[in-house]
Structure formats: C-alpha cells, structure tokens
Image (tube, rainbow, N blue to C red; front, side, top):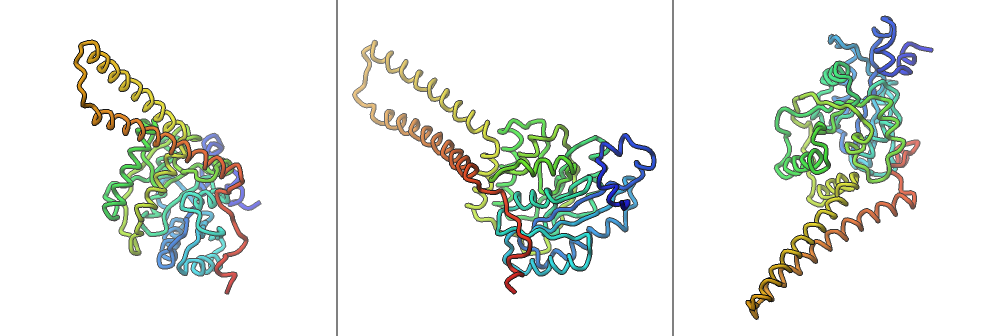
Length: 343
C-alpha cells in the first residue's frame, strides 16, 4: 500500500490519537469544483490548487490528493478543458452528470466520489483563493470543527439583486430556520471527509446542501477570506432562478415553514376572536353601523390569502414527496461526457 493510500484511509480523529509518525503525515484534501461555465477559468484555478502541494509552508501539513471536476451540463467548452486537465495529471478526475442538476447536486456528486480526509468545495470562477484552504484546515483542526466555511470579509463582486438575495438567504438560514448559533454559509467550504461522504449517500432530490450539513454536523466554524474578482463575466441570475434557489432552501427545512403555517393559523384565530368580540360589543350597545362591507372585504381577503399561502406551501411539499417516491434522483453520473462522446 502506498503512503498516499495509507494516509487516505485515516480519519482526522485517527491523526489526533495516533503516533508521532502518524501526526506528521499530511492531511489529505479532495477538492470538488462544480463546472457550469469554466472554459476560461479552470486551467488557472487547477494550477493554483496544484501549487498547494509545492508551497505548503504553514504549520499544518496538507496534500491535495485529487481534484474532482464535476460537469454540470455546461454549455461552453468546459468538457474539453476538463478532459485535457484530467489527461495531463492523474490526480485530476472528472465526474460527468447526464444534465444540469444545479450546483448543490453537482457538489454532492463530487463529494460522494472523494477519498480525502477533508473535502474542500469552491467555485469555478476564481472568486475563492485555493491558498486559503490551508487556513480553513488550520481552523478546523485547532477548534475540532467538522465543517468550516470561508466567509467573505469584503463585498462580493456581484450585482445588487444577487447580493441582496444572498443576504436575505443568509438571514433566513440563521434566524428563521432556528440556526442563531450556527455560522453563516458559502460555497467555499471544508468538510470532514467521512461526514461529507456519508451525507451524500442519504441526500434526496431538491436538497439544499448547507441545510443538510446542519443535520449531521455537531461543530462548525468559519474563517474570513478575501473574495477575488471573478475571472469571467459575473453569472446573471434571473429573478425566477433566484426564487427557485430560495425555495430549495425553504423546502430543505420542512419543520420551520410548517410551524410558520401553524403560527399564522393561531394569529388569525386571535385576530378573528378580537374582531368578533368587537362586533359583539357593537351589537349589545346598539351601535351597529350599516356600513361595514370594506372591513369585511379586507378581513376575508386577508384570511383567504393566508389560506392560499398555507395550501401553496403544503402543495410544494407534496410535490417534493411525490418526486422522491417516484425515484427522482439527486443527480445521475455517466461514464463519459455527453458532449465529448458526440464528437
């Protein structure tokens, strides 16, 4: 068995309780990159990741043992670039999805096929600096975290709508979902390998990865990183796509929206009770105005709106349950690229 393979079979806990020789071995890193529009960025990004093995001067020793490039239905020339990179270096591996399943599903597809002690996930656009993976690893080891996020200390170079939606999603994640004590999230993550791989085996269709990670991690933290300027034109998300992203976040946390429906029901009961008490008081005092259709119309409209919202949320869950029960996969991996195989 090679040293790299022997290292790969150890968990971070094994290192902390092992002999000095074991402690001196590098922590192995699997880097997962979902690829949707990486034709012009992948080569430079992969070169930066490979440099981690040559420029590791930090106290924590790490070694990148694999770079998993997950093709997620890219419409540019990313497939050809991915294959060229894989042919040029044995630690670069490709994962071909049958179509576009979305960033979270593509990330989980790469996580499921990883072998490292730790799994680093980052975007293809150069926004995240791979050299900061070392800092994430140090943070994880020093604080015994299972999950560490690289959180931006500078403003993300996106348009106003995307930044605003991102802030709203982060607020929703931390407060509305009852995660006040949890850290914020981003696509730049370091996950303990065994945790990530076990999670990927159980996630179903439509899951929001960062919500799923909260299901299985006991300890998590963050480290401030500097976001770089993207190496390509910023992706433009339509309002409908942002809404779909937000819906996935909501549906991945079924308890909270359903509790919100219950709270709205309680609120409307108290509101209706108050209005009935007021109407009864008006009746017994003989002060019943003939007019009243406006207030009645407003009340009926409000209650009908609450009812339709509740029905809509329940319908989304029913649709999700039906999709899973009928066997809708989170993703589907092919043996070769559906694009390159046509050439």
